[in-house]
Amino acid sequence: VQLQASGGGSVQAGESLRLSCVASGSVSLINVMGWYRQPPGMQRKLIARVGSDGVPYVEDSLKGRFTISRDNAKSTVDLQMNNLESDDTGVYYCFAQGGLALARHWGKGTQVTVSS
Image 1 (cartoon, helix red, strand yellow):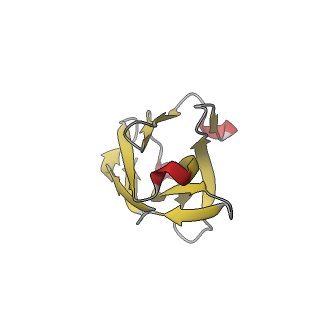
Image 2 (cartoon, one colour; image 1 turned 90 degrees about the horizontal axis):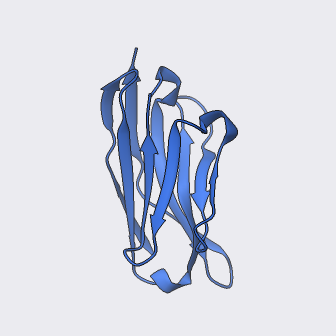
């Protein structure tokens, strides 16, 4: 499975960004897709995911601002980020997981920078 993320950039606090990730290859094996975030100098952390059944999970602290959605037909997962804050700055990584060994695949990170 290969993942290609897009949509990062530099914005002002309060603005919005939409990250998109498209999977290719053995997409039929994918169960879960989602996003991790790695702030500067910190570890990568799960912020949102959605299963093949469409049930979303968003980290509690981001609920109300971040929304994850998935299109199984297109093998895409999107992260809509509204009212961005400076603490949202970081590298965002798309992931997909599935198959017998529950292998996890990663896309290249996309940088999000929020200026206050």
